[in-house]
Length: 140
Image 1 (spheres, helix red, strand yellow):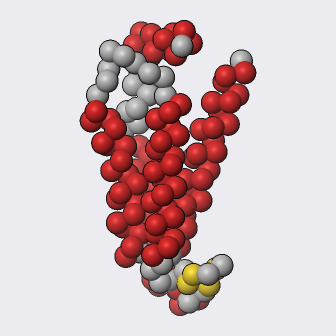
Image 2 (cartoon, rainbow, N blue to C red; image 1 turned 45 degrees about the vertical axis):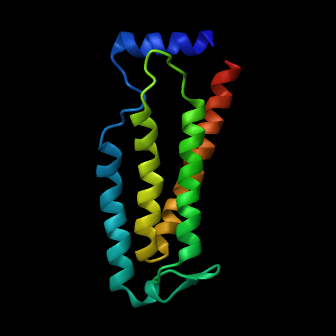
């Protein structure tokens, strides 16, 4: 608890908001997602290729549900690992965190299955990375 309070004091001292990543991740990922989408749509080989149980070029509802669920779990893990600041109990942060999994779920229903697969693998790596860093920092 004391470590969390020290971290929050350090954030305040240097004017850092750990929840405000801005739109930089969006600017990095949008060209990648657009490239995936257009590569799938313009390449017959990719659009008709199968991987595991799904066709990469067709929408896949179970994979869309998995992608949404993974990002929801990732949000919950991030929320649980964040230091608690009793002075800033903003419910808007919680709702904003739920928008990302919801948007991924809705978009994944109409996208080729390769896009929700990308989001699923990315969400798994983000969750694992968060847990690993938290574990390593707690040992120090």
